[in-house]
Amino acid sequence: MDLSPGIAYFWDRLSKALLEPGSHVSLASLFCALLIAFGVLAVRRYRKGRPVRARVLFRALFPKRIVLSRSSLADIGYFYFNIFVFGLVFGWALLSYHMLSRAVFDALAAAFGPPRPSMLPVLVSRTVITIMLFLGYELGYWLNHYLSHRIPFLWEFHKVHHTATVLTPLTNFRVHPVYMCIFLNILALFTGFANGLGQYAFGQATQQYGLSENNVILVFFIYLYVHLQHSQLWISFTGWLGRVFMSPAHHQIHHSRNPAHFNKNLGSCLALWDWMFGTLHIPSAEREVLDFGVDAERDDAHTIWGELIAPFGRAAHVLGRRLQAPSPQSAPLPASERTRA
Ligand SMILES: [Zn+2]
Ligand SMILES: [Zn+2]
Image (cartoon, rainbow, N blue to C red; front, side, top):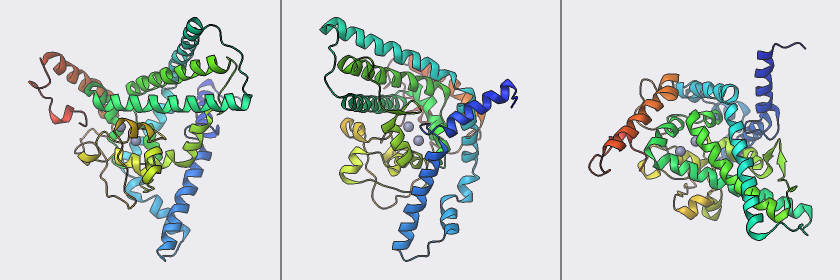
């Protein structure tokens, strides 16, 4: 088929995103999330003695007020932007990943001598490096998210994700390019460090187990519940499970407008780092009624101007006030510019 370069580019990006099994938004993983959502709803209705019909379940999962809301429609725009326009940034992050990985390897070799060949079976060394890279990813994710909530300048860019007033799997793409640049490079630092460490310990040829070049443990969680974190379906892990894993309800609490929930549950797949660093809020087993969003709906919320361009002005304003103010106590920022403290 003779496709023009433009169409070929769009098809290439779209097929990589939707058809590769290890992609963050593969159709296979979305279908898996849908099956889990149907299953959970069906079991809940059955236990209550209510009829389990496919049409009722479908309506419960895709109510018009969510699907057709301005927030959901804006998320489609973010999906388009991040899939088709923003791919270049991944290249920069990859560069810093390889550079750091190499630097850590060289530093260890300089300090402790050249690496000795590993006596471990390949299965063991690859499994360990896969776990190391996954934990590095999770810690980098947590730290970037923590900084994005705590530093007012960064919050102006991350706030875009929190302006969603309803949650769907596409809300995952509702992120500002500046946030993504910082996020990907912090991730590259942590995973690059883990990889350098692993390659020194097990040999440079040791690779993680991956699917479409994505860490296989991360892919497992994408199939299991990551999509459902941005949904209205309350699936809650409590007890020790809630201290280790970031259930969909954990992340819904992260989006809540209740001040008791601000700056909580900053992890991706794991709640472990939140638990260790004191930012964990375990959801209750029963559904909690939550309002999503940041503040009262602005006129320019969900628009390109309001969420893509205006954050630069708001961040510059925050920076200007910080530079002018001799101390935070003498010049408190207005509520609209404060991080979620
Ligand atoms: Zn956040
Ligand atoms: Zn979110």
